[in-house]
Length: 325
Image (cartoon, rainbow, N blue to C red):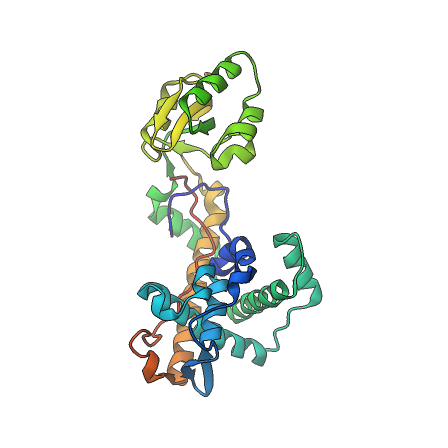
């Protein structure tokens, strides 16, 4: 987990949901009819429950590896194989635990999730959304009661001072295009009074085009060299056209934020989330390790050369750090 990101941002609820909403649509294109053997082929048994190629393909989709679903695991990278296999076993354990705890995903839960993540409803989307929600609710139900108190928060702040020191940062508007002549034309229009936000939305190739060119605060040395030139500009000033391997850039400086330290009052909510997250990870890791020890995992001989036993639980991070990189 990165430990120096913007204080005001929150990360997605783990890898499943982070990748699921963006990539799931790709999973249901006609190419999803997989080749390379019978997808009911059994890879391993977890206790008496089979883990099939179909299970692995479904897990790959949930994790955002939609392209893997059309390939045989033999074609996957070793790290991908093991990650998907481990996630499949963990999901099987969580599913079993969720059923024992009578975890349910209501129609309201499902409709709310689909509304937040998709513009249309399809049967396959509902199936995968329901599985994601079920696993998330099961993890939540397994988590221990929070034990973090104010003294824990103060101690963390005192013991990790470097985490809360923010270097000098710039807030800028940015346009990047592929051709120099196009950038020169845009800059001329800006100098004549055209709207930076409008031109960024219409012309810029950068991801911040959707926000009118406004970038998140950044410090020196964290982006390509042309970006550092803004630290010598005045607020409101429009830069010359600057080149980089990514294209031709135009900047307008909004303001410089002096270096400062995030106060305990500003950071306390993040610190509490961090400590709760660490507590959650420790608990779920211990719990999952017990489940893995209690139930035998037998990989079939035909797959034993490409899959390794699962020996630990991969707990996903849910939060980010308080300080911009």
